[in-house]
Length: 478
Image 1 (cartoon, rainbow, N blue to C red):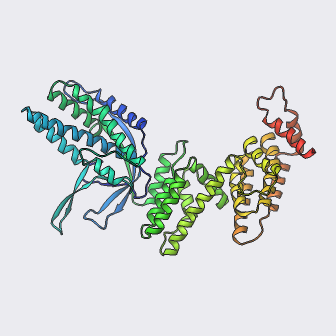
Image 2: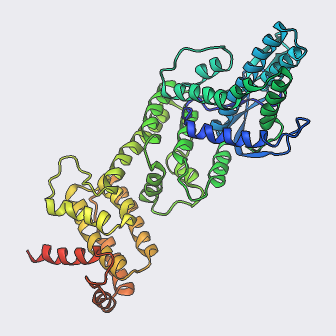
Image 3: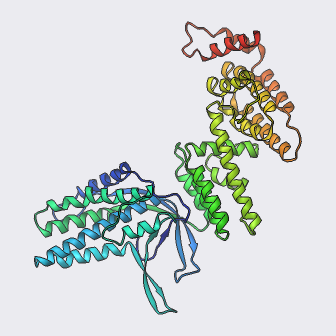
């Protein structure tokens, strides 16, 4: 992967280096486990699989190379691999100088080891027309990290870092040196040191394995990343959207800078992909594909690349609106009223907390997102009141299937945004009719009454539903 034929670039506005020392320690553990399999002749018997690298093959028009690999997934590992190789090369150079001073035969071997290891960090760029050969970095990082990273790979020492990601880069380099390289000093001879250092290097370059998946277009590369990483945990679809939009704005640097700042605030938030999963049906009126969230949101909000300044400004405005809706999403998820200067009564605002916190009806979040954007506060309060009563009976008491309700919510969410865009009043008339039909067909009065009879304060382990029932009766009675 790191041979002469490939060079890798992290998109300029990709997120910064993020590995903490725990991540670096995990890598050290894996390498030490392989080194421990070395036999008496210095041969490593073990190996380790370091995961998958996903890249996009991008044509290179401004240099002598025909293309480069844009890193979609794997920049943290690839960056740390390079730091590891640099630490090995530095130690090999130091040992070569010491061995030479003591006229030990291993001096040339250490020097060769250093030069060969360095060759994996840079490649020769041949410009036939100019008649020149220059060394270029094998890996280039994001705009904020690359200058410091290249200094780490070329200078003997650095001043302390100020940026957080630079601190993490330096800390990773120092931990790799401390865990894997420094213990070589305990070896009694230069020959033993050379054997040990070679084994450490070979644990990555000879006995380390990755699967390198590459695509010829970015959309497919991002989709590959989402599919390969879809194991139940949150995906970084926000990072993929960030990369796509900022790359599309390359010809518009001012707009790109504004969009980068907006994305920094979005992508740095917790549960941002959960927000995107709520946001998509709120706008599109249907659920996003399970493994194509990035592509669905991209097609929805960034379907065409900007051609003129006005298009670029629209891109920026779209990202900024995403950030604003993310703020609303956070409020809704905690049951907080999304209007800054509320005119709704405390009783009305409490309905939202009951709906989201007590009844745990997060299914309604996409609709509430639309309502907070498209409806006025009175209309939003009316919707919350209606949903609280519906959710309690339909889902919490009668345990009816969620999909028909979700579909009704999504249709209403899209209709609300359409009405707002065309400056028409937002109405919940159609939604009210849909929910009434669902209650009649799936949570009828007889079923509702029967299920209520099953509630018991003495035997009910979760008394939330009893509290909701009794406090709602009390609310309406008073």
